[in-house]
Image (tube, rainbow over the protein chains, first blue to last red):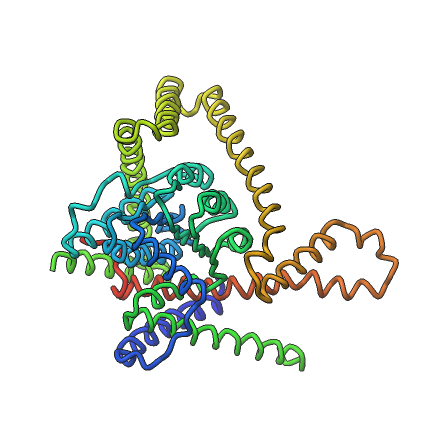
Length: 248
Length: 205
């Protein structure tokens, strides 16, 4: 990394922390509006019906390790898992959670246990419903496919996936299971767009926490991302214009 | 209350690792290297625990759901076969590495072929599923890029007017990918910082 990149990275981190804290403090009454995403609205409806019908949900967390670069997508997957598993407690059947890395498996079990304990439903926790299905992308998907039976009505495929996740979504289609897909990989997004019932494209993945759990810190996170995005757009246009007039 | 020390530990180690990155050649950067090595060792142990958990889950399935336990039995048999072969021959053995790689590559290739077929069928059904402008753009761009990347236009390159048009078309996926990746990286930075300031805690403590 050269000096410019080093300073830019430092600026982005400091700026983001300040914006995140400021938005969290200022937006306690949630005056900053968030545009709803159609995919999440539709998924919420189907998920509600599935709880009423007494059916299960399959939550797929992806196969990226937390300490690797795509770990942010896994954090979003864990965040959405917490909310969906809490909502599932309204029904008779708890969700099945699958992951493709050891650390993600242990974290998901830990979060689920805490969430059930807080909702006085620790008796519903079972080690057989939060587990690793495989440690390589294809073994992970192959291990997840037999889970998709008639007992399951909805599936969230949120996290880091490549095109192999298409097999998971396609298996769900054959069993009439409604799938919501969101990933940070470009190849994965293209595959999901063709196969999944509802799909989130690009940075919409990072809008999931504020849209399913309206906490001020989640809202602040989304507004900070928007602010950084505006800055990036402004910088790109400015640098293009400067190059056009021959200054840079 | 129970999670406060864990949260403090997580935030402190995150700050020190980040500071070690920005201040190379200091004690912080030395600590950063040790912390990352520790994290990798912990992740390896987590994988071992998760694999043991996987075996227990499938073992339980064989007895609790005997009618649906066919795949579980195959998984256990395959696991035990590779596990004991690895112990007997050691992972450095040529026979063992070729044997396991052949099984993995064969199965993965079959799955990839299956995915190709599924995607081809899904592309034909796309307009039934998505009745929006985005689906039209997706469909048109798929046809255009299939044509441009097939090499069809390279034979018709004597038409000089086609060259700038093709250059613009070919730069579109790159521009789109950069836009999406920029958005994703901004999202990833903010998500990471949420953990760093303790707003997001993916652990119970």
